[in-house]
Image 1 (cartoon, rainbow, N blue to C red):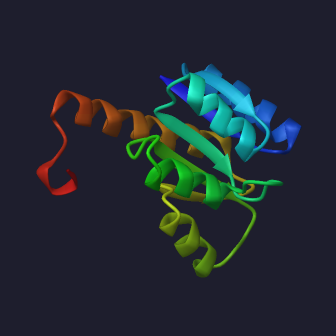
Image 2 (tube, one colour):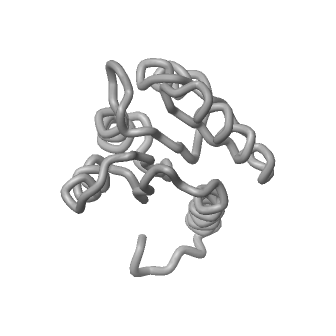
Length: 134
């Protein structure tokens, strides 16, 4: 399954990309929201791992574009941030992220969230999703 990783820190982007690819996902890394929008125009990414703080289009703005725009309301979005506090969690989820993880985050946690996302996507695609989350 394709995963788009968006992070303006090149080292973080590369490490996340390698970790996610090592778990069997196909990964593309981009460094900001503008590049992510361009990537989404040419390819389908059922899952996105997105940093909050980036120049230009930040994580919440990208999530709102993806979730509430016409591109894709069904993409599973993981938001990563070093921000702390419940108000930031609420803002991240309110922008359309499916889950919100604080940095630094152990790579295994990101992988488990991606596996959960893949399971949900596959369940919806096969019509096996529980009725209460459709």
